[in-house]
Image 1 (tube, helix red, strand yellow):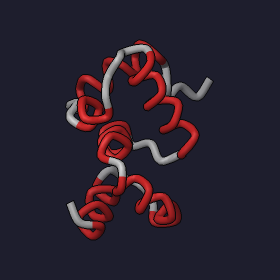
Image 2 (cartoon, rainbow, N blue to C red; image 1 turned 90 degrees about the vertical axis):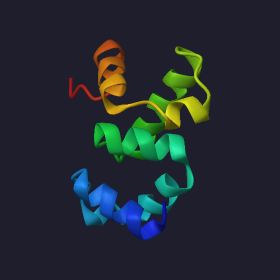
Image 3 (cartoon, rainbow, N blue to C red; image 1 turned 180 degrees about the horizontal axis):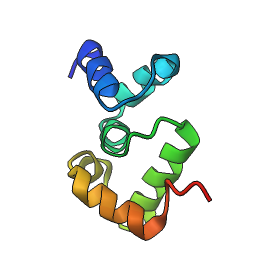
Length: 86
């Protein structure tokens, strides 16, 4: 995926342009990109926590994380409550 395609995908996921500084970091890491697009999360600290949980708790490699479908990430979010506001 090119940076332009990544930008378009992030826009489609509802990620606002003021977070464009994170696009390069997200684009350079397929696992991070997959989680960001699937869950609509852009906060680098939250993404770091999610990726750490997927690696440590689920035993997944970055390649496996990059290939997780959105519905699986939603199920895992229900389990770990990454995106809870409380």
